[in-house]
Length: 139
Length: 139
DNA sequence: GTCGGATCAATAACCATTCCTGATTCCGAG
DNA sequence: CTCGGAATCAGGAATGGTTATTGATCCGAC
Ligand SMILES: [Mn+2]
Ligand SMILES: [Mn+2]
Ligand SMILES: [Zn+2]
Ligand SMILES: [Zn+2]
Image (cartoon, rainbow over all chains, first blue to last red; front, side):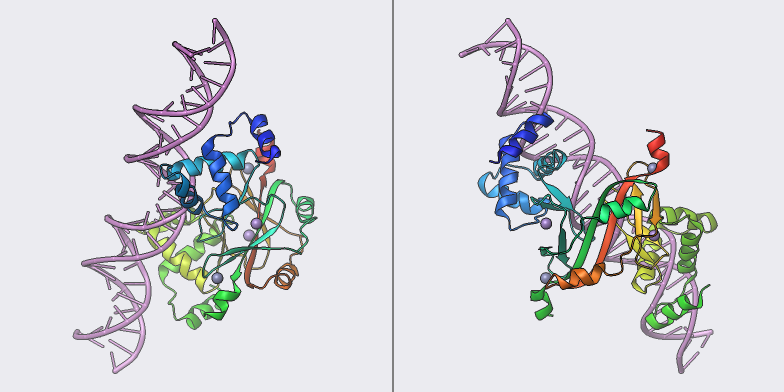
């Protein structure tokens, strides 16, 4: 267990319970960007007694203290991510798979936005949708 | 009524019914980026018999034939927009107001993304959240 | 005017997520 | 160690936005 994660729990006042640890491990085991339901199914393999609501609770605590992130696409439940760096994720509109897109510079985007609005910018998320190679072949 | 809109209806095969026209007019009357519920309330002022479901149907037809667009933020219902150009909208996390942000160039964004992924990119939407000046003062 | 398909209003159903409640676990003080 | 209060939990009900269903109504081609 990463000591940075322990730090964030200590600072936040939340405790690192077994359920929250299990949810974190599920995020690691899944191959990236699972939904709450996906996490729930993974956690249940080891602890069949957990409830879906508990997973939602744990995910929201983990996100609040900055251990995980989340992104939202239309027509898909929220996807969770251990990668906290600003980066691009693309979702396949056919099968729902989510992949990361490296190599697109997003560095100055938020500051360019801030320069052009009187709002105080809190977040800027690029939501990308497309068709994955597998689905394109099978179409 | 814009003749371009008539064209899009003719090409699509959908008919331009009074309800769809009323929804379009509501989009114009609202000061930008209303939710389906907002549109419903405006339409109801002139025609109290419409149902919310009818508004959803009309909005989805209008979006399908490319007359209106929509954007999704967390913790907010879908917002609809007559502005079909690629552009930025920022939503205030306090009061929910949505404003446009001119001046940020997004032109090459989609092609830069396409260059860095094997997915076939369909859409790239920048979802921006912040605090509007009014809410910042009243905080 | 008649017919058949499109569209409509109304309502039920859906699904992701949140809320609520009572039970359990955790943790520090004594 | 033991007790009591607080945090967290599981389970289920409730919520809110949206979509599907259904029977009625409209409209255009003939
Ligand atoms: Mn990612
Ligand atoms: Mn806009
Ligand atoms: Zn796919
Ligand atoms: Zn505001």
